[in-house]
Image (cartoon, rainbow over all chains, first blue to last red; front, side):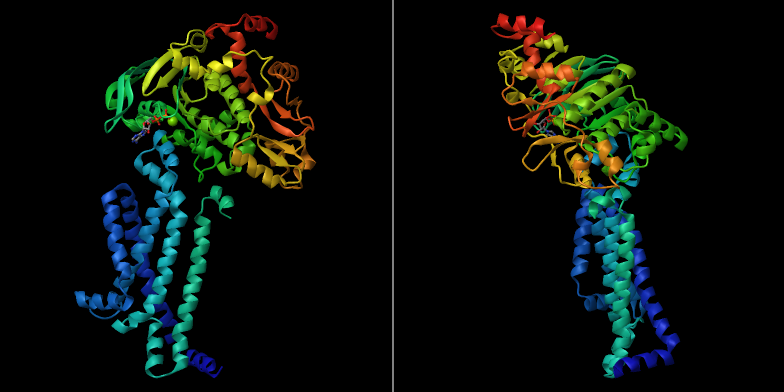
Amino acid sequence: MQVLQKSLDYIAENPAQFIGTIQEHLFLVLVPVAMAIVVAVPLGILATRYHWLEKIAVSITNIVQTIPSLAMLAIMIIVGLGLGNKPAMTALFFYSLLPILRNTLIGIKNVDSFLKEAATGMGMTNLQLLLMVELPLALSVIMAGIRTATVICIGTATLAVYIGAGGVGTYIVRGLQLMQNHLLLLGVVPAAVMALLADYLLGKIEYLLIPRGLRAENK
Amino acid sequence: MVKFEQVTKKYGKHQVVKGLNLSVKKGELVTLIGPSGCGKTTTLKMVNRLIEPTSGRIFVNGRDIMEQDPVQLRRSIGYVIQQIGLFPNMTIMQNITVVCKLQGWTREQCMHRAEELLRLVGMDPKLYLDRYPTELSGGQQQRIGVLRALAANPELILMDEPFGALDPITREQLQSELKKLQEQLQKTIIFVTHDMDEALKLADRIVLMKDGRIIQAAEPDEMLRHPADEFVTSFIGKDRLLRSPDEVFVEEVMHTNPVTIESYRGLAEALERMRKRRVDSLMVVDNKGVLAGIITIRVVQSNLTTGGPVSNYLSPPPAAVTVGQTVRQAVHLMAEQGAGYLPVVDEKNRLQGLMTRASLVDILTDVLWPDIKENGEPTAAAGKEEDR
Ligand SMILES: Nc1ncnc2c1ncn2[C@@H]1O[C@H](COP(=O)(O)OP(=O)(O)O)[C@@H](O)[C@H]1O
Ligand SMILES: [Mg+2]
């Protein structure tokens, strides 16, 4: 209880710093996720059209995913991105690619083949098939990938402090160095709350994206 | 309207369509029929270029399809598939007018067309336009599937076993509706089926295929009178033809697996079964299997909010035949009642199966065309007069 009180006191004394740190954490996560969406969704779509691309893209992102987080951050420094937010965000960007790419690919591939054939047989172009049938039916699955990516990144971003980035990880590291549990809490609790909140909100959006005609079945 | 010239399709070494020649006249409904794997679907899909022929030429309206833009070609041809393939993310209105939209119709034009088409098959536009496909029974869904093919007014429609997944009663209803539509609209239709009854009922001309070749192409009458060879005879059903309706019992020709629901079940369950089994009505049985009545999709849908067991909404069961009665008796009862189908029950009134008009066609061809028998018996010919 004392620890908690000390944490709250700290926030009361440094409100701007606390809020700034959370904002920075969100920035650290949302920018790479957004960039990953911009890259991975089109890439996933293309991968459903070209088999060779599917193989390459999936293998590469799979490999990226197996690199431990700290090692990944270290690599960012090695490849010359230096210290600070830039290498951290680059690492998070790479981590976000796989879940989004994979879900885009699976979401579109899982659309019933007879629906695609009906659509083509009625005279849809490849693009119309994508926009009118495949994407609407795959959207909730793609959203689930974005959700996974976001939650992973919120957690991983706490490590980014080791390469000089900001975010709530700074409290954790300081807490550890100074053996101050109340500082540790200031990092751990917001990170957990952000992850849960993001999961909840994105889950809501995911549900809303299920085509209305399919929702009753999925309940 | 459609002309196949020496059309061949190979997959690797395997030749699935072998030098097919066929021409389909404008306004004609041709059924492609034959055993599974004989190349019906392949032949059909070559017309809208979902599959490209290996050699030979196909003309639609006098133009070689390989010289046309496939997208434009497909938009000018209606297409109906067995899996129905309505888009679950679109409303009924959007589904019906998909091709219209591709062709740049305005929203008003689309709306107007969808309403017009729904009325054509007796579905209330107000009730259905804004629904989603999963909210409809299988029969209703395939009605929409057919309307979707008609929407942009194509002259030619391709149908690949469109009613194959429907239950017998709904299938017959849709066949009748299609026949009526066809009489009104005079489309050119190529219709794939493996069901001889369906072919006999719908076709202006039946094209019987085997191993990628046409064995016989003839009007139904002609095919029954003069089957080209042993294969045709056996495909029509030789052994059925050798007995009179007085010797065949209803249990031999009934469908043994009618879709039922127990009377204590709820309306939601009834709707679910109609949807799953693609029927528009269910036979309701009590816990002993005794036939209690029927319930229709209309009743279910209009009472869904009130709820309660199906037993609250029963219509009385249609007249039934009993196991052990002959087909002749069933025919008389059917004619008397003007019924499209008859439940078959045992002596304790427990539901055993279902007789449909289609199951009768099998038997009646025997009586009406005795000369296709190998050793036609005069008794059958005599039966002909009485049965009319
Ligand atoms: N993509 C394909 N590759 C190889 N063989 C195929 C392919 N599609 C169909 N076939 C073969 O072609 C034959 C005819 O198929 P199909 O036209 O679908 O028959 P039907 O519709 O008469 O049942 C079958 O033996 C099937 O196995
Ligand atoms: Mg087929």
